[in-house]
Image 1 (cartoon, rainbow, N blue to C red):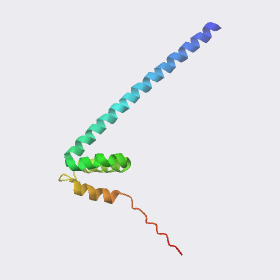
Image 2 (image 1 turned 90 degrees about the horizontal axis):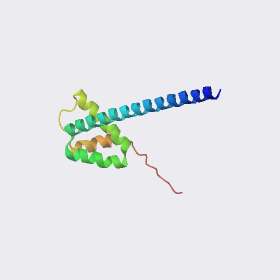
Image 3 (image 1 turned 90 degrees about the vertical axis):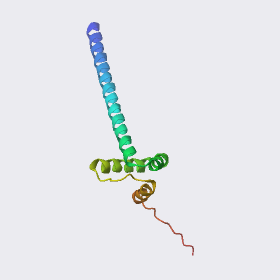
Image 4 (image 1 turned 180 degrees about the vertical axis):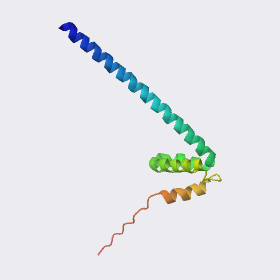
Length: 112
């Protein structure tokens, strides 16, 4: 009886270890795919943006990472579809960022 219990424990332990190794391999594969995507994205952005515009995006990324991620994704999609003919300079990037930024609502307080 004790031998059967030990055998069940050993099998369960082996099964858990195999699942853990499979999970680690999958996580490493996902990390590698993410790194490859990031490298391709940076390559496209270097090709599409001027150095000043890239600097503006990297600075803005600290304050508004969601906005920058959205802009980068849109720029990569436009570049891959061939809709960007010339490099985007700092002024054009500023205009694009202003268009994509959510509108702020003004609040007015009236005193009686």
